Image 1 (cartoon, rainbow, N blue to C red):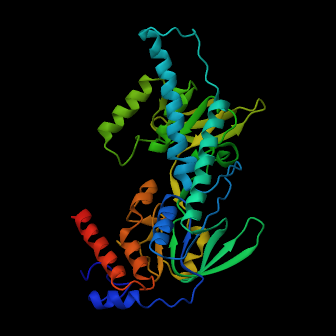
Image 2: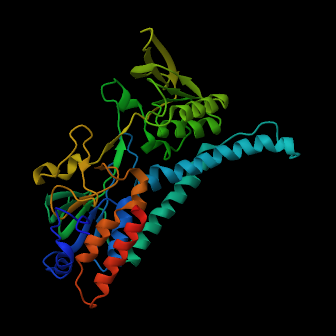
Image 3: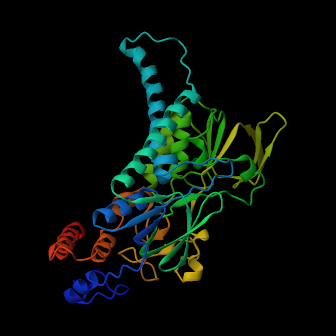
Amino acid sequence: MAALCRGRHRWKGLKGLLVFTRNFTGRYDYDLVVIGGGSGGLACSKEAAQLGQKVAVLDYVEPTAKGTKWALGGTCVNVGCIPKKLMHQAALLGTAIKDAKKYGWQMPETVHHDWATMAEAVQNHVRSLNWGHRVQLQDKKVKYLNLKGSMLDEHTVRGLSKAGKETILTAKNIVIATGGRPKYPTQIPGAVEHGITSDDIFWLKRAPGKTLVVGASYVALECAGFLTGIGLDTTVMVRSVALRGFDQQMAGLVTDYMEAYGTRFMWRSVPKRVDKLSSGTLQVTWSDTETGREHKDTYDSVLWAVGRAPETKALGLDKLGVQLNKQSGKILVGPDESTSVPNVYAFGDISEPYCFLNSSGGCASPWLYICLLASRPNTKGKRTEEKIFQMIALLCIIRD
């Protein structure tokens, strides 16, 4: 039992737990401020509000290099799982139409896909989810602020609006759930100026046309898959292996399947530069890592899928002493998502070694919920303690 919230929270046995529940001071604007309105941040804020906490969520999206921006909901809702699955569905429908002829359906000889129609439908659905998240926050009495948040100290958050107006909020506890964004290979000339990422592809008004996808992560292959599926000429440039970190036998089955359905792969190739021609097309120069030879071809779009970076640089964490992994830039956390600074927690893409990407919406730590629950005023006799012990019992069952 003593190992449940060991260390930073200084809970010592059951007495410490009960004392901690009664030490609420009311000195702050909020019990909890969450920086980041993605899967993890929204799940955490709503759960904390249900536990009686006064909660605020700060969410702000920096536009991409191409100017793409979106609303509340984070990567999964706006530029990840949701639009990706919808565009995959569009590709599957195209395949079904082709198969339908063999089952007696009288179909026209040629069937064309209209990107603009699909994109409008996908974007409208995403906007409806954005609105739904705002309504949910309002229903649960969570304050939503469209501000870019950064840390001033372990109890103070600075929010900056698009117009530059500053808002200061104080909170007993602070959760950082700002997620990650796609990386550009800035060392390659023309990569930023002429390329796009997964943060752009779902919000394009026009079809990307003949597309070169650079990278072989699951993001790269997912995008290449639906682009091929809707009839676009798509090539994947792979430096070494596809789906690094995954079972390579399965990775081989995936790429073999994609090749059989029309996606081209350029293996052991590294891009050198991207130039925009007078015609508007993009000329990509790359080299073969085995022979050293350089090659060129033209594309309508170049999509970079070469990894993601955590959104931690603008949070002011260095001034607070929050420990980061120097290589990845991610925040180091314990099993309860606590950072090296008391009262500051982090989870999702910006933390390690626990929880990753959209799974954070489901695993925003139950331990953190316990800590937040313990922070609420004890106005109902033993009910608060009973709720804590129920959650602890549930966690023991889950983790065993």
